[in-house]
Image (tube, rainbow, N blue to C red; front, side):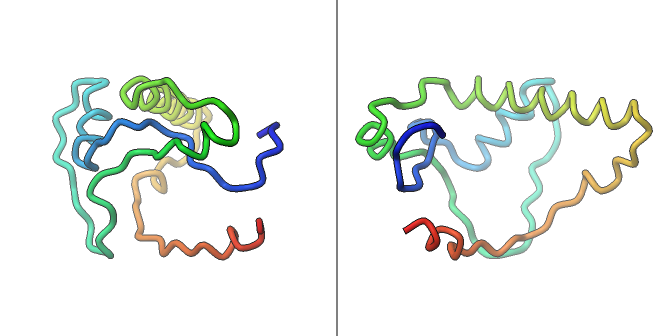
Length: 112
């Protein structure tokens, strides 16, 4: 964030995982045995990893944290936020919904 890099870059792991593997990793943190539900919508990527060439080229650095470790930190942070909302009497009903979002890159055009 505090660099002079003027192009958008992905920050992520070079580890390749499928979306099903990603879900299984998240479920493993509390030994949950839940089915992975596929929702109707446009076909997205079947797996994901980060190409860190731009990070290395522009910043001379790349992330070293594993997907498992990063997702675990994120999972337990989200869990603590939900626990905080629940303790404050918030209605958590809206947190269990998912929707297909159409992504556009219009905002990236403004960076040029």
